[in-house]
Length: 210
Length: 108
Image 1 (cartoon, chains in turn blue, purple):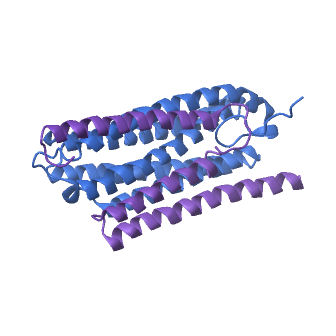
Image 2: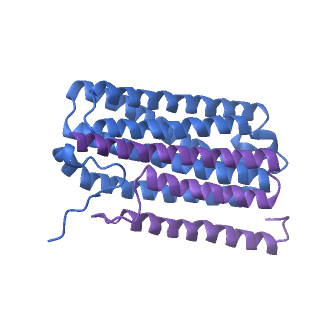
Image 3: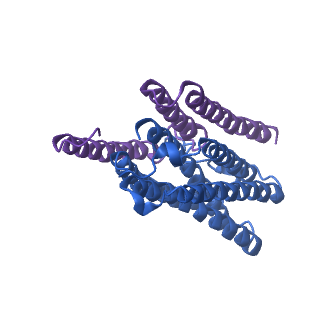
């Protein structure tokens, strides 16, 4: 007989510390991973549209007038740090640290997610001030189709965090809630991966080829 | 109990390594853009490779997807999705770029 695999779904595995949650989590989390991969293909389509639209500026404002790399840098650091804090929350969960620690790391993640959204919306507003609105050119339509799509995912993640916080309070640390936390962490890490694609292709690519 | 906290330390180190690596790669990316100017194609190629490296670091250290044996084929799924993505993006850019060239539109 083969020994049981040490790793049965993407992300941090809860393992023997929480056998109930581990079993319940395995199948659903793999299904969630399949969903994330199809989400990735959707993002890929938007990236494809953006790349082909990069020259279609129709005399409107282009990347050099619109992009603020300092703000993008800050957003990158915030999102990266939130990916770490969500990982620390998962570790606290796996190794049975006091519940306060778990809630603390999730709360820090929520705060970082909200500050990311704040900076991103501020960027969009300053872009709109310079005439960079979606209907101005094909390039801007593609830009507004892709970057806010990621922002929407982050916003959904923030709502998810709040809902999980409420569920944790009402239902307690049940296997179901724990298993949802596992998927939230996976979702959050995935968003950071998409963001790396966005800074590389949308922002740096836009500045190089736009 | 000792083994428990030992494991905890090891797994936490994994996350910290992933974070530190990603941080360094991010700094290198923005540093390259800042000091060497983003308009040069060579610099952009470097930035692209740094981005790719960061994707791999995060997949391995945050999402724990690597070549270890797992009961489900997470890595295969990632690789297949990447293949689909390459066909979609590469195909789109190829077809539309070719079209733009034949219609004598400016650079594509």
